[in-house]
Amino acid sequence: MPVINMRGIKREYRMESKKSSKKESVTVVVRALRGLDFSAEAGEFVSVMGPSGSGKSTLMNILGCLDKPSGGTYNLDGIETSTSDSDTFAYIRNRKIGFVFQSFNLLARTTALENVELPLFYRRRDKNENRQSSSGRRETAMAALREVGLGDRMDHFPSQLSGGQQQRVAIARAMVNDPSFILADEPTGNLDTGMTLEIMGLFQQLNDRGKTIVMVTHEPELADYTKRIITLRDGELVSDKQVTQRRSALDDLVKWKNDHALLADNALLAEDAHSAEDAL
Ligand SMILES: Nc1ncnc2c1ncn2[C@@H]1O[C@H](COP(=O)(O)OP(=O)(O)O)[C@@H](O)[C@H]1O
Ligand SMILES: [Mg+2]
Image (cartoon, rainbow, N blue to C red; front, side, top):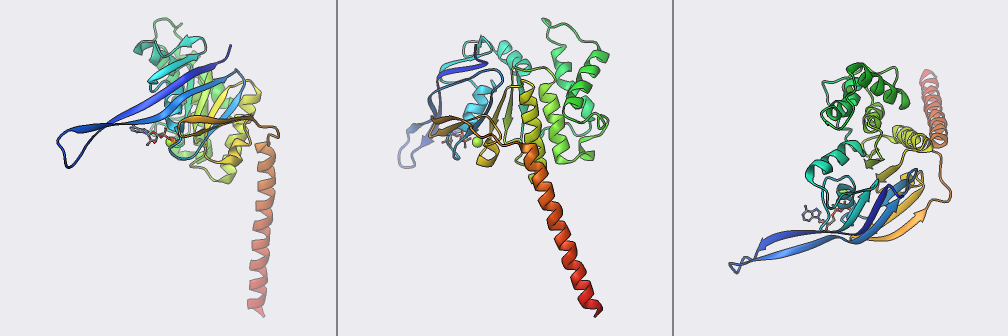
């Protein structure tokens, strides 16, 4: 059974616009998604691509149960979301989906560990769940931080962490409830090349360990690190391809670091040459 099964998903935005000459207003309908079929199995790593305005954010909001489609069905891990009530909708959002955003969205006055604990804390309110003790929550959050390589940064505040480390905290937070899939929206949009490769490497490792990931990106180089690329255009799915030669982000990171070290060496040599000239 697929984790994500969307059939004929439509999303229309209706906007009233007044004609300046006349009194009556006209309704403009924007068809942001025009009957989209998309499904993904557990263990996939899918990137969603497409030009600006093609419907990526609209699709992302529906996938993340932040918005309901105007038509079609969306089955998530066996739950039909299009007919579910708002409580179920909120439950799905909290428990079935791990969100990762471009801007990390961490609480500033809260340590890495506490940030990761937060979703477990909300889960406690759910009466159908086994309540986890506070030490149990702590253990679960610590394990998630260790999984993203931040075992030694648990008590740091976001301001004491690099951008890449902050995104790792956000990824740990996204995983702590063991969601059905991770939904990442331009997760490396605020990161430099080195940190981008680190985060893509982490996603690849997590995916190798069985995590299902859907990532929205407009950068084709990043999509090459995933396993499958779907492309939207004008609200329609126009291409769905498996990545045949997947790149390894960690290999690329090593190469990038070597090249960088070489560049730095050359710069130093050039500086030395200058000082030597000055000395003459
Ligand atoms: N809240 C909204 N109200 C009206 N139109 C919208 C709204 N959100 C998006 N749209 C329109 O829907 C289309 C798809 O937008 P969007 O999903 O944001 O695309 P993308 O994320 O690929 O840039 C665009 O034409 C956009 O103008
Ligand atoms: Mg968008």
